[in-house]
Length: 274
Image (cartoon, rainbow, N blue to C red; front, top):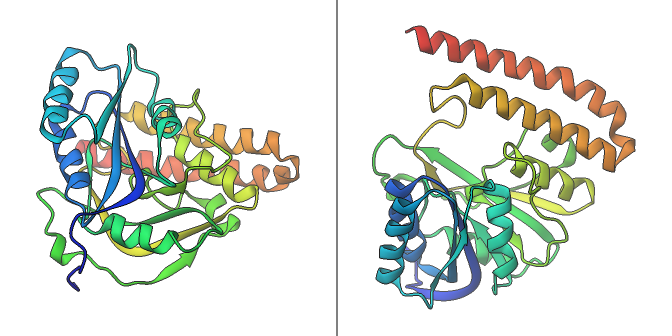
């Protein structure tokens, strides 16, 4: 990996972390934001309910990094990640907003690479990137930084969500937000809406984040898989309502989505019996 020539330069990016119950991983997520070679100008953590334990951990983290840089938005009750991200987004001061889930972590050069790409390209509405699944602490020097970039076309996005929320950077003035009333696949819904409205989306082939559990079926509860499938179907239907010309595609995508779900569910049941 090529070494960075930047060291803790602050850039006009607002980082947003929604947090519900991940008190045990929150500090790791925050540290990955604070340790960027180009650090975001601010970090906004939205405490989406979660009780006193999360509140105490968050207070200690804020004391460590300072309230001037790390601000906290408190929801008295859980409203979902989409609503929490929107709350942080609405308070953002940066020209760009980057999202990170409380149980994920960023590569130290994530902002340097991603903001460096977006800063001079005003035509890009949303930018994502690749990631790795880790069971232990990541060895960032092993992560691939290829410099390759691909446009995310509507046809490709209709078939599947193309990147995780923890990889997403958007322009602050993007004219669409996460669906407050959707708790699963709400990220897929906003990316699909942006694309249908003609917004340009790209994905960097660089591995600039890591997750610490599989996306599908990681909690061991089949209800998560079912809820995600319902969220995907809701996304297709709501997008079709807003854009009726997508009806023919929607009629094909619904059985395709159900087929993918049945395959995932079957694999989940097989793993469960092993």
